[in-house]
Image (cartoon, rainbow, N blue to C red):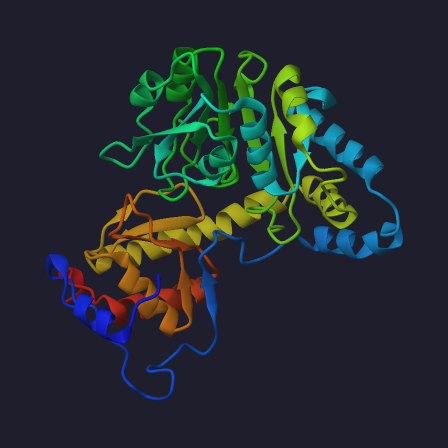
Length: 373
């Protein structure tokens, strides 16, 4: 995303009448910066892990010299009980990223196909290149949701994997319960439907449901979850898959040995035992997202309705220059997505961090709505 000052100024008066305001030249940096760096670029939980999880990680020092095999089994059993399956239906990963890689290695190969939305979280498509599988990308609908009928039509006997990120990253949109049920029924049973639910805990739409309920009913559904988002453990790396025993068994040989550390396993057990953590974190971030959307609406700005801890905002021009201008102000936001080049993805931080972002955005791309006049 590198861009020279001259290129930035050239883009500044670009399309759709949007004006990008360059930074005032006040020092060697070429502009003014916020008092501190604000990181809203990776959809993390700004509040971090719960106090119980922090204490559990600190206590893990006493077992740091031992391999965490027993802890892995314990976490697997707890997750299995939570989801109403057996331990043989659960597989841990070093973050959900390793789970996605395992799925690619297990179900793809040269001559096989993976079907996914465009845009979506790209790890599955990236790993597919390693397996030399063919990637089929299906554009989103006009309202930025998975085009499930076209994704189903793209499946054939060569399709090994169908990836559904629900809610979707980067758009924040969801596949609803009835839609998911119909979609899975329309996909060949020989293709594994991999449902990534990294942002599951933020969803409030009553028409949404986790695909976990499909695991006992369909032999080709695997659901992926992570402790990185609502549990605030992105830096500790723990994810997991829940699926039919044969699919989990096919993925397991591709995991690294002892792929979870003792500290994160202890933190996971503490997090799962903390009944207050998830609803509190969901409320904090969703309320801040709603506040931000209301402020953006006052500015006359357009957003994609989101059920996650991030938001897509229309900026009226190629977003690359906006990202750089915000970065110069020490506000870091999501990258440019080629399929949605005029949309800015911002993670939801604390209310203070989100307010800093909003002030910076208003400097970089001035509001033009009637209420802002």
